[in-house]
Image (tube, rainbow, N blue to C red; front, side, top):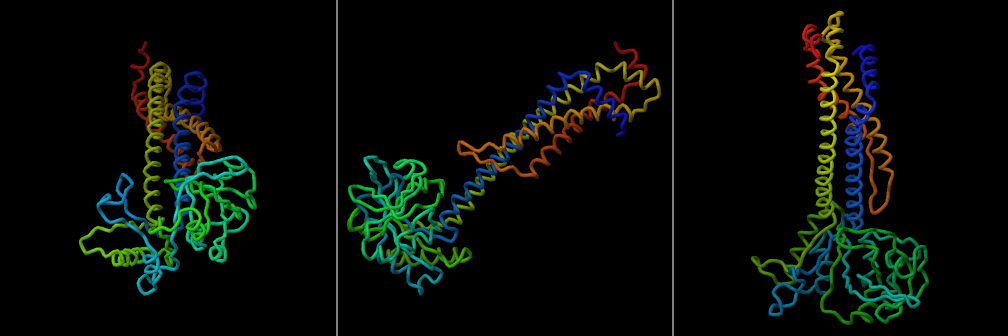
Length: 407
C-alpha cells in the first residue's frame, strides 16, 4: 500500500461524495450498533448480577414448596406444609448444620401503609430478627436498623425501603422519625434502607421490615408457619455443604421418608447469580449477533458500490495499465478505496456508539467496553478488505486492451 494508492483512493471517494456517504452510512450504523447493543447487554448483565448479589452471596433461603396455583402441595386433603420454630431450632444446631453461622425466620404479609392521609399498597411487610439484615447485607441510607432490645420489647418500629418512601412521602423526603400506619397499627420509622433495586422477582425497595415479635403480636397473630427461614453459610465455599446439611435436617424434622419428595425448597443467591449471569451472557450474544448482521449488511453495500466503481472506471484502468501500471497497483488502488470507505464509516460509527452509550435512562445503564470499541472498528476495516477484495481483483484482472475497448 503506497501513498499514491491512498491519494488515488481518496480522490475516488471525494469524486462521488453522496454515494460514498451512503456507503459509509451502512458501516456507521453497523459499527455503532455493535458498540451500543453490546454496551446495553453488558449493562443489563451487570445490573442483574448486582441485584441478585444484594440477596447475600453466602445466604440460603428455605421456603415451603407450593404448587403452581400457590396452594400447599396436595391441596386441602394433605397435611399443611409448614416451617416451624422446631425447624429453626434444628437448623441452629451446630451439630446438625455446622456450616451455618446465622439462622433466622421471617413472616411477611401485604397491606396498606398510610402517612398523613396518603395511602400506599405495600407488597411486602416483613417481620424479622436483627440477623436478617446481616444475612441480606442490608445497609442503611439513614437512621438505624432495629436491634435485639426492640425485638424483646415488641417495639413498634420499622425500617423502610426507598420505593415506599417515594410513593408515600415523595422523593427526597427523609422518613426517619415519621409515624406511619400499616393495617391500622402505628409504627415509627427508624431507618431508611439503601437502594437494592429488583432481584428479578420483586422490587427489593418496596418493603418495610419490623421486629418479628412485633409483627406476630400486632399484625399477623400467632402463626404456625414462617414464610421463610434465612440462613447465612460460613462462607461462599461452604454453600454446597450447608445446603446438604439443611436439606438433610429438614427431611428429618418433617419426617420425610427416603423416597418422599421434599416439601420445602432451599435456594441461594449464588445459584441465582450463576443462572442470571448465564442468561445475561446469552442475551449479550444475541445482541452481538444482531449488531454483527447490521455490520455485514454494511459490508455488502461496500462491495456493491466498489463493483459499480470498477465498472465506471474501466477505461481509466485500461489507460493506467497501458501506461505501465502493474496488477498490484490496480489491486491496491481499489482495495484501499474500499478500506477507506469502511474505515471512515467505522470512525463515525465509533463516535456515534460512544455518544449514544452515555445515555442513562428508562432503566438502561449501558457499559461501554474499550475492547468492544477496538473490536468493532477493527471488524469494520476487515469488512472493507473482505468485501473490497473481489471488486479490486476483478479490476486488476482486466487487460489493457479489454479495458480500453469498454464503452
